[in-house]
Image 1 (spheres, rainbow, N blue to C red):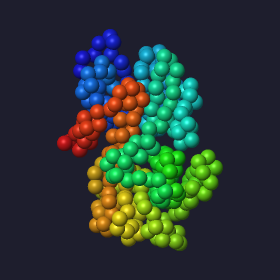
Image 2 (cartoon, rainbow, N blue to C red; image 1 turned 90 degrees about the vertical axis):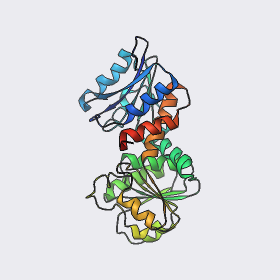
Image 3 (cartoon, rainbow, N blue to C red; image 1 turned 45 degrees about the horizontal axis):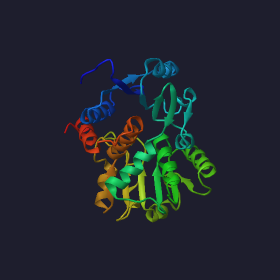
Image 4 (cartoon, rainbow, N blue to C red; image 1 turned 180 degrees about the vertical axis):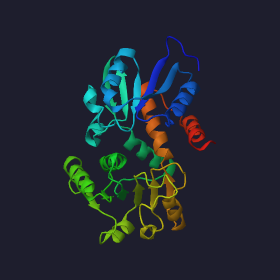
Length: 287
């Protein structure tokens, strides 16, 4: 990488951030297209987030991704946010246009693009069971419903979190578009069996000792089971779902396409998807 006085800088704000795969993906894309750009990780402690955002303007940094724990708390420091980001209540991509900072959320859009490009799955008119009412689940549910999903059943052991998210979705997106349940609730087996897609949006599955986030006996052949966990590539849930005859996908596609969409927002150029996917797989899986 040849850094010059004209090099445009992009990056990612997170805490911690040493593990991020985003630099590998974006720097590969810049290099492939011959762009004089570089992407750097910035570890930003929560107490320093406001100062870091001011630094975007001071140093002329063209854009950043925003990851845990800053996706919600960054919003008050921005000049504007897109409708999707406002409804989701989180920003994962910031564009610096001459000192004016605009927040986007490409997580949900990345999920949808992954479904289209890698799973050949159309959400319109379908029903989803979403396991996990946290930030990732929130983005997936809201973007999916905005894009034509008929209904989302949100399942979480934290019943209060489920209730709050469901009420918010029904108020801001579409009435009666979301319902909630907790594992073990009566009738959950029938609802899961009737759905078209199951999305696992919790960290459960990242460790070999983690329990299954959903009873695989509830699944049926022909469903799509999408686990947002991408390392390991085959979680216990995905392996169990495959044995039941379900189509399966891990979350690497969502990570890839949310990055591709951010790249396209920043540069105005079509993302080299194959290049970015190869760099991402090499970084995450060593291949």
